[in-house]
Amino acid sequence: MNDEKSRQLAYRVRRHALDMTNRGGTSHIGAIFSMADIVAVLYADVMHYDPKNPKLPGRDRLVLSKGHAGAGIYAVLAESGFFPVSELETHCQNGSRLSGHVSHKGVPGVEVSTGSLGQGMPMAMGMAMAGKMNGQPHTVFCIIGDGECDEGAVWESALIANQFKLDNFVVTVDFNKIQSITTVEDTIKLEPLDQKWASFGWRAIRVDGHDHAALHRAYAEALAARGQGQPIVVIADTVKGKGVSFMENDVLWHYRTARGEEYDAAVKELEAQKP
Amino acid sequence: MRETFTRCLQEEARRNPNLVLITGDLGFGVLFPYMKEFPDRFINAGISEQAMMSMAAGMALEGKTVVVYSIGNFPTLRCLEQIRNCCAYHEANVKIVCVGAGFVYGTLGMTHHATEDMSALRLLPGVTVYAPADRVETEAVMARFLTEPGVAYLRIGRGGEPVLREPTDVAGYKTGKAVPFADGTEAYILTAGGILASAVGARRLLAERGHSVGVVSFPTVKPIDEALIRELCARVPVIFTLEEHTIVGGFGGAVCETVCGFPENRARVVRLGMNDMYSSIVGSQAYLEAYYGLDDAGVADRVQAVLEGRA
Image (cartoon, rainbow over all chains, first blue to last red; front, side, top):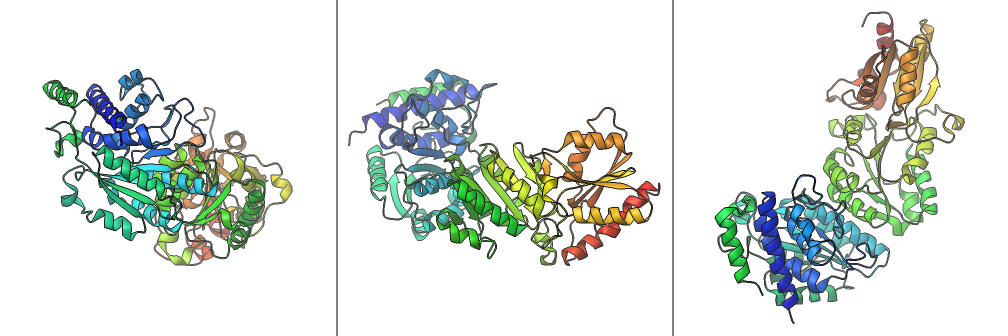
């Protein structure tokens, strides 16, 4: 698999997100970096869409349920041609439509607004349910956080999606192992996470969430499982803050904004990894 | 009211192939005729109101008109933030139905007393709130409820309520319109929901005691009929609001918010309902209405006291 395109896209998502959070003085860079490779693979190679016709009926849908990583979605959409890259400069500025938690209002390519955890996944499930009822061939993708798995509505949805055999519904858990105050392990344990989902009736695929070739294989398997009557979850093992050494695996970077020397150092590290 | 709801729902489902009904595992019996006729457009989401409400929004964004059915506080307070974020902010065609307004499930206890739902729903931008009084009003609002775009909330009783209206009273009903029941010269009682029956009974008792009191029903609580309220305030010195619901922020609250915006107003507003409290005692709907002074006699006594300067 040639993953050049997705690796380029992931680099640009991280680079934009660093600038966007720096400019906006906003947080969640760690949660954006952990899912950057996932959204890059989805938009570079997996999803069917037309940036010139964002509401194309046959498009694949993506719902970012962990809405706090909104900058990552805006960046991937701008890079994919949905709106000018220059608009990213308005992120979190006064009067902007690009809010820190992802918003769909006036933003081409964003399906729904999220930010309150545990709500995007059931919305995406409703979209998948409607797709099934309509006999449509597209897939509904959804990205949720690991901390988000504390929300009861995630598991309500897991039960319902299984009951209704939503095999057009592909959820990815960005399993970066750190939530708001401390680690997932020290907050509300999730492991064995793939087994939990499997026991809910889902086809669970566990993958290194930064290995593009592995992500490509995982989504190929997910799409090939259509027709088997099972919703699909991709448990992506990721590193919070992936891409900048001093942000990686550090809860501080859930909230911290890279400024001054930290910003310069982060830029340098990312640019050194440019594909 | 429940049977009227189901019948109107089926009629609309025949017209609109995109209509889908979701229940939170309630409505056994009531929904059966619909389930039988439209098995492919019926979803039982189980006892999971939060996921159900977000799911409804997702389906609506894909072109469905989604009717969500449950009882008491489950389709409202339990998932209020989902209604706000997923449904209202997305202007989704989600139609929320609550059966069991006020003390309909009086014997089941405080958890099943729906006495804050109108306050909660009406505070959300973009949500229309309907509270019809009987099956005639229910039929009239159903046509609007199911066809107008956006999020709407319908609060109904269970069934067996007295029929107080004639179809001609509500012919061509438009959302936001109040429906006068009878005129009066000393005061008006404005009501929302099945409690109209108490206002009508109180009106009769007050007439026997020499007082002339008008009654108006508000099948739509939001948007409220501001023009009619303004007219009534100019006509009489006191307006009573009556609801089987808290007096905080609900129908009475809506009337007060409206009245205080009239620069010329001199009318007093007196709210009758639950006085910022829960009911820890149980009983039939009729028992609890009487206990809290919301039955014919209770309403008549309180109105009379005000009219005679004793309250």
